[in-house]
Length: 67
Ligand code: FES
Image (cartoon, rainbow, N blue to C red; front, side):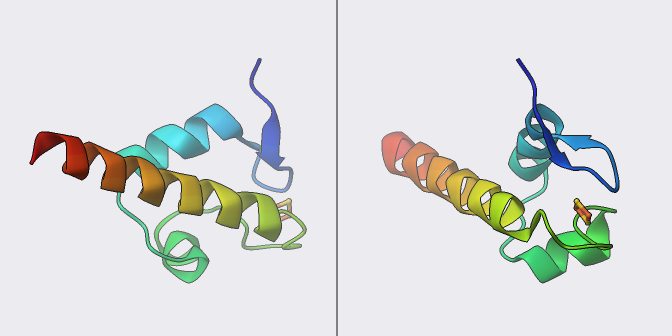
């Protein structure tokens, strides 16, 4: 079941993962510039940074498998 990651912007974890898979983002600052995520109270920063990290790992794994 989807869980809310960023309460202020009502972003769910599934949405965030899809976004990160479609739009490679390397840092939380980039994400704040590109999308309205974690740009208000910033309580979600740890969670969002965790998702950015996991998305980068998924990309690395995918590129490793295809080579
Ligand atoms: S919960 Fe994400 S900015 Fe407030």
